[in-house]
Length: 88
Image (cartoon, rainbow, N blue to C red; front, side, top):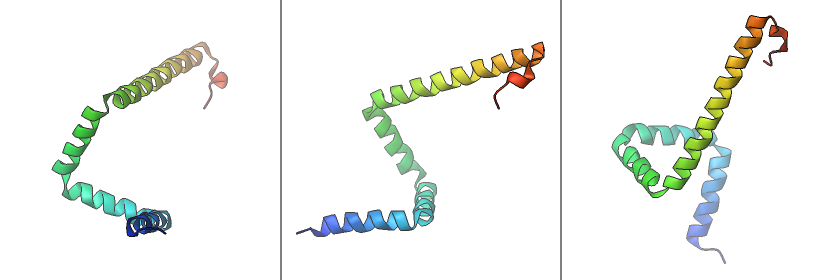
């Protein structure tokens, strides 16, 4: 037998799947109206999940470094007259 809380979870999941635009709009409206609460919650999460934040930052920085190196390499190819070898 399912409890009321379990039924509500199932209902909420189905609602989010059926109306994703409404859910996003509602979340944005909440964030806009509760900036201080949201900022405090994010700060709290970051403090309690420093390993996840560190891992995210590492991956982000690695990706940006690779993009920068790729852009520099593409510039070099253009300068040498091999622009046709550049991947779009």
